[in-house]
Image (spheres, rainbow, N blue to C red):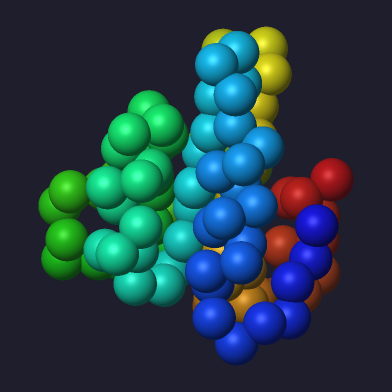
Length: 105
């Protein structure tokens, strides 16, 4: 799903509704996730951040290669997965559209 809404509430609602007891969720975001943490923790969802962050609560991903490796590891461990990738534009700005596209295949 792709959303162009100005807020993330709809996409987080959709993500949480897609999670079920057999699916594992992974949220990778650059945005302010604080208001969603209680809901995501309740559903046992792994949360990662894009870019260098002083917030040590979450592991961070800094390059498209790290993103690819993280997603591959997560999907290889878990049979049924749901991924929410929020603010992919950050990686595109940091590297390039071609590089991000290369690693997202």
